[in-house]
Length: 379
Image 1 (cartoon, rainbow, N blue to C red):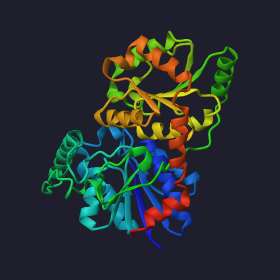
Image 2 (cartoon, rainbow, N blue to C red; image 1 turned 135 degrees about the vertical axis):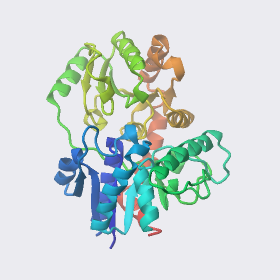
Image 3 (cartoon, rainbow, N blue to C red; image 1 turned 180 degrees about the vertical axis):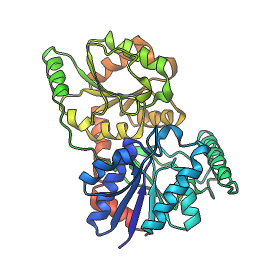
């Protein structure tokens, strides 16, 4: 039996997929320990998962907004290095943008398992995708700045030799949903790897009941960081306020908004709302094409309206459009009232529902037993 040390990025999507995988490993006799920000300690402990918490002033430790910052390198590697020395794991489990994990894997020669997103960040063996090649160069550049802060030599942005895949990389999708892209040998599909906590919100339940009684369709919204596009957020809310619909808005990772934007009467804001808690009420999902929300929507049988805000989100949106489970609005169309309302009205007729169900079944095929066989196959 092996000991796995999880070092997740401080983001709910990364944490929740790690929890699912950790439970699978524990049920099969392995030991699991998390090294994570102190803000997650209570949740992990209540789930029976061992945790070494790291406290940091200001933002949570390994916060998504500062993944690339070389000023964090010395602190992150020093703190996590002490944890590795204490735990002595057989395997490190991390996410694509946790730079310290890649450094520690190199220093200690401990195998690194990378729980990735629903879209591969880097090119495959053919190296014929210019966007993914550009991203590999960009992230490698940030990683080399991080390494430079630690007096380490640079690495090349070559998909054949880059350490940024890890020893193994688990893509949160299925071959049917993703397609036949030429993925590197260390990449395995692992299905949805989805987990969400139990949830009860009386205020939210009352809002949904009132809006349903009024005959309004209910739409779930998750916009994430939007790369801090405050103006776009204000424009979206203005569009929502003019529609004959009700919106439940999960503001997770949108802490940069503050309280500057008023909540329209047909919207309910909450710091966290798992889609599963509303699956019987929600008609469709609007998001910015982040992996966990897209996966959640498909698993709960919901059509998607994607408003991508980054190149990888645009790639994922195009892929989901190609599979017929999403409509994508790009660039200025994302906050154009006529375009937005037109897409919502189209989706309320459920034209994509059969496609969503088809790909939902491909993800559900990755039950815990199959996930464990995939992870254990090359151990």
